[in-house]
Image 1 (cartoon, rainbow, N blue to C red):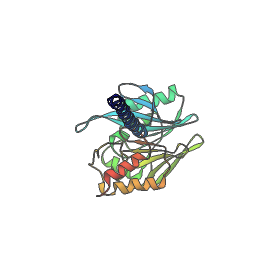
Image 2: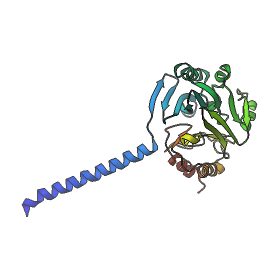
Image 3: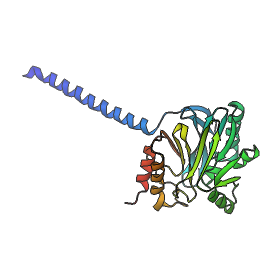
Image 4: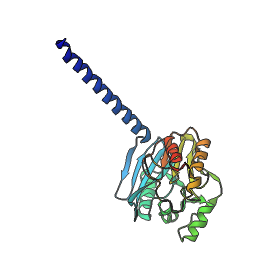
Length: 260
């Protein structure tokens, strides 16, 4: 009997190791699911550009805040053929000029438009640089009105609910689904890539509620549910701050703001 004890202990040890490995693999799977891979294409002190899909790039710039410190802020770039469209400017003129120069000179892309998703500075802080390069800018009409009241640089073109802009042979869309982070927040959608730029309306996994100074928290979850109902097959979702992912970001945002 005693000769079997070491074997039993060995089997228990192996079983324990397998459980640990299984738990670790499950954790890695969940992390990878919510933090999709990216390739860094450009980096400076003020700007990072990452490839997150075949034709989808994420630009990251930084905003110094009193409450949250130096905050990384996301925008999106869609490339098709020799053309590009940008959702949200980097946070200031310097970073925006870097992005424009990188796309136009290094990548030889024509920037057909920049789309601003709401009136906060992390979305339009670099708009002057785009106007200096004669790049057309668009935003919801409500964003134009609020930007004017706040003495911000105003996007040149407005729309109410939806706009479609051609980028090469494909479409880039901006849509309004309702209030959330702000009353005017819109999202970007690229049908050919099944990609959503949610801006600050969509939260990264494990993120908090963030800046609620202009928010409608009562309607936020309903607005995101409307997006989910309209675009149920998204592959890539880019939030305004933090890691990109997939549909789970919409589910997390809905849960975060759902009235209990």
